[in-house]
Structure formats: C-alpha cells, structure tokens
Length: 462
Image 1 (tube, one colour):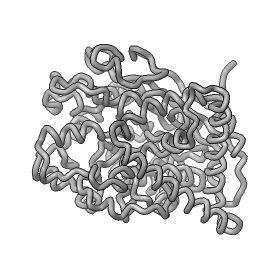
Image 2 (cartoon, rainbow, N blue to C red):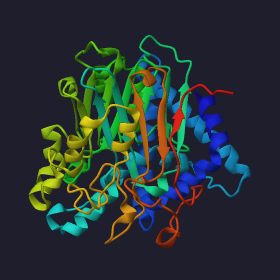
Image 3 (cartoon, rainbow, N blue to C red):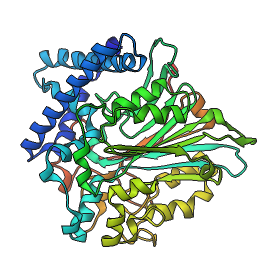
Image 4 (cartoon, helix red, strand yellow):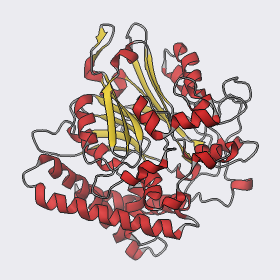
C-alpha cells in the first residue's frame, strides 16, 4: 500500500498543495497558537499509533490493517515530498499531508487543544450563534426506499467552505490478505491528498454503502475527553470499510479507540439485506453517532422500511443529542435545532415521497428555494443544499458544494453520479470567485461553478 500512496502523491502533488493552501486559512489563519498545538497533538497521536503497530501488528489483525493504512499514508507523504523537493513552488512540509487527512478531525481537535476557542452558548447572541452554526454545518444525506421496495437511493450533499471544493473521485483496489478482510475495493468522493472521503460517501465491494453528516458540539466541556491515545475518525472509517462484513461489524470496528474528533452521524447500508420487491431484512441500516467518550449505534432498519432516513446535522440518539448541547440550543435559540423540526427535517419529510427516480433525487438533494419555501424562512442555509454566499446580512463562501447519488444496482458495481459546485437551486445564480470573494483562497478552482452531472465508475472506457 506504500506504493499506492507514493504514486498518488507523485501524480497529485500540485493539486495537494492547492488544496492545502485553500483549506489552511479556514483552520489556522490568525491562530498560530492553535496551529502549533494542533501539530503537537497530531505528532503525539501518530507516535502512539506507530508504537501500537510495532507492538501488535505481528499478531493482531486489527493493528496489521492499521499498519496497511499508515503504509499508504507514508507513501503519500513520500510521493508528495519527492515532488516538492524539485518544485519549489510547493510547500515542503510534513504537515501538508497530515493536515489534509486530518481535516475533518481538526474541527474538534482545535477546540480540544485550545480551550479559548470553545464557544459558550450561554453567552452567545442569536446572530453570533448562527454565524458559528453556518460556518460548521456539514452535509445533508438521504436514503430513500421506494414503497414497494423496487429500489433504494443513497445520496449525499457536502457542506463546508467553498475553498475545499477541489474534488477527486477515487477508486481503490488493494491486494489485501487476511481472513477478516471484507472489502479490498472501494469507491468514494474525495479530495487531493486525502486518503478518505471526508464527506463521507463510500461504496464498498462487498455491498456496503456508507454516508455521513456532521453533528455539532455545543457543550464544549466534553472536549476534555479527547485523547491522543486514539485513532482519528478517518483511520477508523478506512479500517471499518476494509474489515466489516455488515453494519454491526462496522459499528463495533469504528467504536474502537475513539478519538472524540470529527463527531458525526454515520449511516451504513447493507445491500445484501435488501431484496428488491421482496423484503428488507434487519441490519439493512445501522446508524452510528460519536462524541468524545461515547459511540452509540443501533439497527434502524424499521425506520428505513417506512420509506426514508434523512440526515441533517442534528443527532438522532437522545443521549448524543443531550450531551452535544442541542437541547440547550433549542431552549435558547428555538426549534430549528430540534431533531423533528429542524428546517431540513421538515423539507425532507414533505418532499421525500415524490422521489422515484435519479432525477427526483437530483432535485431534492440540490434543493434550495429559500426565497419562497416557508421552512427556509428566507435563510439560504435553512434548506437541503445551503448557499451561504447568498446570505443577505453576511454572505460567506460556505455551503453545499456537491452531490453524489447511487442506487441499488449502481452501488453493486460501485457506480454513482456526481455534480460539483454550489447548487443552482430554483433560479439561483452560479457561484463565482469574484467580487467580495475574489481574494479568498481558491487555488486550482474554477472561477465559476456551472457544471452538469457526471457518472463515476471504477473501470475506464477507452
């Protein structure tokens, strides 16, 4: 796997440097002390992992496959640095690859290592709180099972800073050995220099599909439970994708060595338990949620059988919801932060019944009619595909910048369709890096986003 990482580093080094330059300001511009402490945390954490690998990889298959992931990571580092040695325009720093792969985890690591960056919801005004939420709300997802079980659609729309919209869709096929290896091949949406999806949107060889959206942490005292002696979320996701044969195994695998960083809701769909036009077996959908010190998971197939599972940055499990501080957010700032009555919960509930085809899924996952929709209340981010740049009070280059969709038959051959760029919604203008956004970091990115859907598949047609 070192060779695979090395080749990717060589081939995508320039794009990796652009991605680094684009995302670094989001985390660290104006916060040198946070960057210093983040590097210290990541270096200590890597040192701990490598020690576990050296001790246990010879007899423990779990750590042997962690070793495989780190072999790919080390290869990526070596490939990138090889190019950077001769191309002086590229930043030649170990932190480039380290930061890119830890990007999701950094959202929480920064607050864990620098307590002064933590919010106090009790002291925040509504406008200040909404600015915080709009800057961190990440992703919408929908799993739609048709009424007669004729098909199942799985879809995901990414939200983050538009500077992070440098995309690469990846297909990995590794010659892995070991009695517990469940999937040697996987396809996923990704970015230059990332060995994970981040979004997340994965299709595995063995019939598992994994989607993810991020839950926010308003009760920031729980960051005290974040530990360096752990595996980051991206490590555990890659490991579970490799070794899990079903949703329960995936959940248990992911829960080990919880870092408490990149605190998400994960949805694992097992297509092997779905018999089209016949029935849906228990275990077809597992939902996993994480916080520092806790990972909660359970079979949610009963809800899926009723027609759909939506995901929109609000925790499903009550204890995760409470410990995250969402009930306090509802008490202080209103019902929009509740699980049942968040704007996207209402929109998904209203519109999911019309989904029957890929075109229907395209419409709902790119949906933004904030000027008219009563549930959006005039907010371009109170909808399925946010356009933060259209916020009248404080436009920001943040929001929904892609969508991926697959269905039952497509996923079995690791195919999907995808579109890049902020949504055009209902008569919205395309986003451009012009005007007030012209000076923001957008290395390697198009000036204007106005693209069509593209099919993603693991085998090239020449």
